[in-house]
Image (tube, rainbow, N blue to C red; front, side):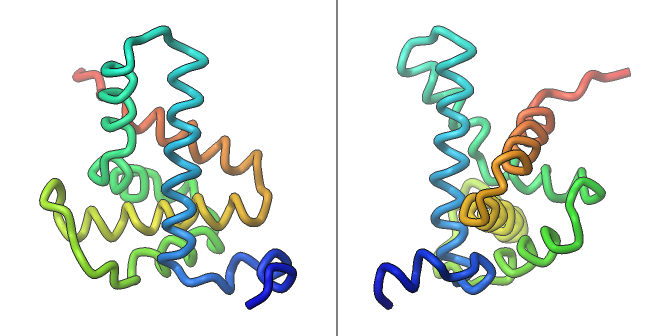
Length: 137
């Protein structure tokens, strides 16, 4: 496919794993920008903080704990990503968590290609809020 056709192709036509691949990079960049602009840390501490936010278990929590946040269209994108066959699974999470995380990354890639910057920011803020430890009552 030539460059002009690809750049005008609607985001919904991309393969789910392609969207997840892009979404992973978008999410990682948002994490790094947030860390660098809000904190002054050593490279090791930046890395440790970013790994915590990018962990599949945390991404899966975003999907399972906040289903009302997502629109019907977004649920469909997450479902497409969740149902994709990645080939290998990491040992750091369950297969279900990994598939949910892939679905969330798929949504990040989709929103990025659709140039829905405000919704991307809202989704990222939800991820940050979900990553915070819950206070026991």
